[in-house]
Structure formats: C-alpha cells, structure tokens
Length: 125
Image (cartoon, rainbow, N blue to C red; front, side):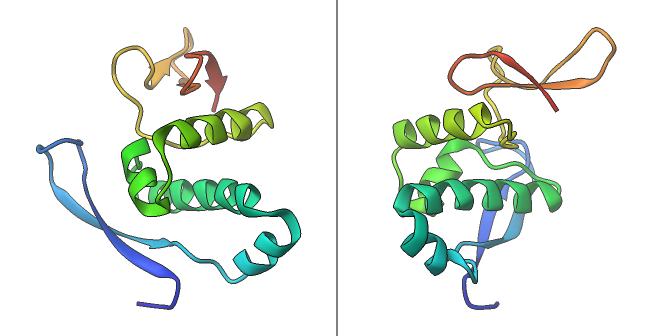
C-alpha cells in the first residue's frame, strides 16, 4: 500500500448481502496540501469526494453516503450539501443511491440517468 491510500471493504449489493470486495482508494492525494492551503477545507473535501467516488467506480463499485462519511469523517448532512454543490457545478458524483426513487433510472431511450441526492432531479450521465 502506498502512502495516502486505504484498502476499504464494501459489499457489492450493499447491506449484509452480496459479495465482499476490497477497494484501493486514495484518501490523501499528492496535491491535497496545496489545495488545503490555497482553497481551504471545504474545497479539499469536495475534491476528495470526487476522487474517492470516481476511483471506486473505476474499480467496478460505487460508494454510498455512509461509506464517504466513514472515509472522510464527515456528517451525512455536510456530504449531501457538498454533493449538491458539486452537481450544481455540472459534475456528477457516482454514488450508490437508495432505490426508493432516488437511484439509477433509465430515460425513455434506455440511457442511464442519475438523480440528485437532495432534489431527486434527473441528471444526464
């Protein structure tokens, strides 16, 4: 394991079911200190949210808000606000969403569609 990386165990189907899997995630990046000094704690957290979720997706898995909360030691309400902020800037945060209407859906053409964590508004992927 390299400095700044963490092995994080997840269940592929969430909850207590599904195959257990270990992801290698970069918790501390090489330029994180520069980001912290230049733009502050919130900017660094936004950058880490995108990095962690994208690395997980590249490894064939998606993190949920609980995973991010555990990794970043941040409350769920702060994470939700941060994700809304990221999405309002046009970025998509690849998260495992709840299946109660706030998860992955398909458009009429069959293309996947993401929904915003807070508003449930559809976002093109």
